[in-house]
Image (cartoon, rainbow, N blue to C red; front, side, top):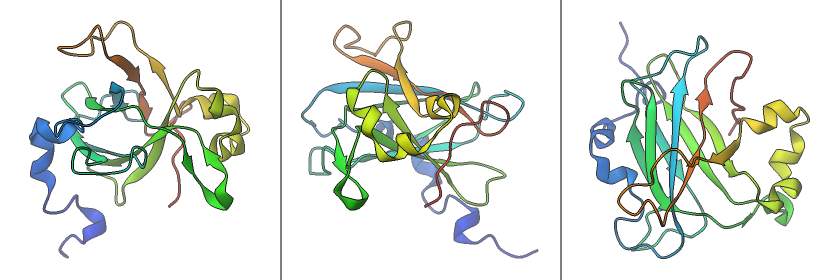
Length: 183
């Protein structure tokens, strides 16, 4: 049996998903509107994926000493993940077209030979209508798989009254499969 290559493993940093600090991108005192991003990762049958690493990255605000711009969390036994971050702003894309505020998401799990990449946009943001990626997805149902929605039922944590909670559930396969991106 051949040894696993880098594209077949999460690598030497798998242990970081067990440290909840990595899921808090505000831990160094980041400025901006703090939000909670939650979701559930499920397979093609709708069963929870309980052994995945979910990574997020955002370009706005830019990474700094107070904001790492990157986080990693493990899914729990019900396939749930949770991040505390700063609500992103718009960023330039290809051809200097402005992209709507979003968070990039990478999924790493057993059975995935390469990480899957998707995005979380924010429902109700008027800039979504002009976003180059969202505009390229013709089917409204498919486009909706990239839109995080406000979750009023899920508390935001200690500062629940002050934090918006956004939910993006991710489905790996099936009729309601999340849109994944080639990078």
